[in-house]
Image 1 (tube, rainbow, N blue to C red):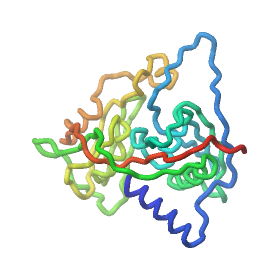
Image 2: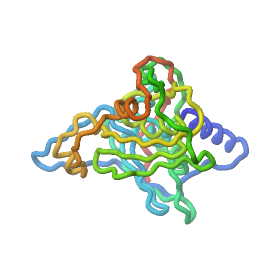
Image 3: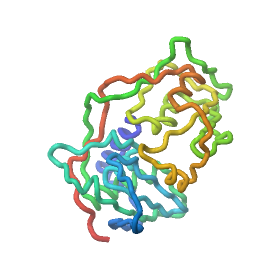
Image 4: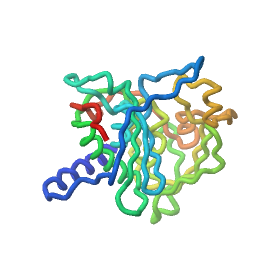
Length: 274
């Protein structure tokens, strides 16, 4: 992921040097979002929300979230990989929710990677966002091979692109058939199930074919009625992701403290008017 963001940053520098404009939306609307609160309703506000999700419908793109979440989504990061600098720590960045409606140029449906690039441009222009990358020692999880050895077979489709198929997934119960996935692909697929960065320390190279069956973790504090409203009604027993990786793939998730790269918000302002 750090490599992916580094490539984007290098591309932005190259674009500036060659005079090629950075990828941008054709039009975009940014406005403060105020939820409609029902009388007597009870809401839990999480201090560390997940990255915002992009809704792509044709060339139209929409998303919603606080600035920290929008930045995390735009750079393909998790919330714990985005921080405010000590020199800039305005509280509105963690409390005010903004709704973004935009349209990508042309007629082709944009990819998530293209939307991220355009969102980075939007945040820089509308929020005056300036970011930098820094290294700091932080809690992480290392993905390592279990003492009994990995339960993975080299892919029989090594010449094909990596593929993940849902095999009867329902609710929070995830069943996936994976073809020609590298360890980096596996980490990218499951990293959102962890509250810390997940780092590949297996030393395994190449692609592998395997099945993975686990019960996904809902956000902390999610009540049963809220889960039901989200359509999560499948509460059949199953293994959490760490146990599934250990028992099904022979891989262990080990807590550690390591130096990791984070994205630091050095400056931002409330968005300019539409």
